[in-house]
Image (cartoon, rainbow, N blue to C red; front, side):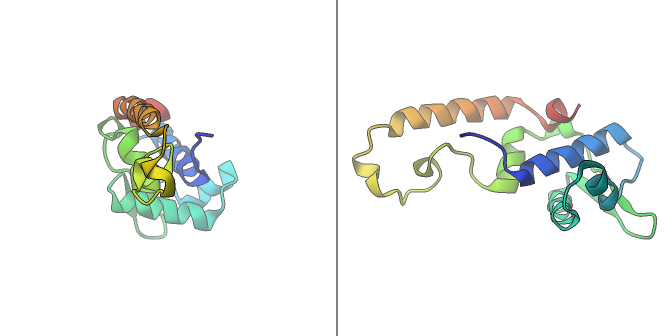
Amino acid sequence: MLKFTKKTEYALIALRHLQLAGSGELINAREIAEEYNIPLPLLAKILQQLAKKKIVRPVQGPKGGYKLAGNLSDISMTYFIEMLEGPLGMADCSVESNCCPIETCNIKMPIQRINENIRGLFDKMTLYDITH
């Protein structure tokens, strides 16, 4: 089944929350975690990862928090998913070459076409499309 991991879901929830809050407002991780029932340590790690990739900007201090670092319409869903999870693919052979039956596999090409179509779809979508 193709589905987002909790990590990706929580990142999208946090980004939508920040998007709806407005560009200048600082939101702390605890506020997001409490409002959406997300484990705070996990959300904090996700926000740190988003900060390293300059998707959000952390502000230190007692009234600190996070805000969007730039325009979410500049970030493709493909980049976002791969930044959080690694290569986007439906099967192991599409993201790594150590699949045991790769030489005799009769679905390699159909899987590759599916992967290309999914990637194409995510390439056309931006974080703004999802969070707005």
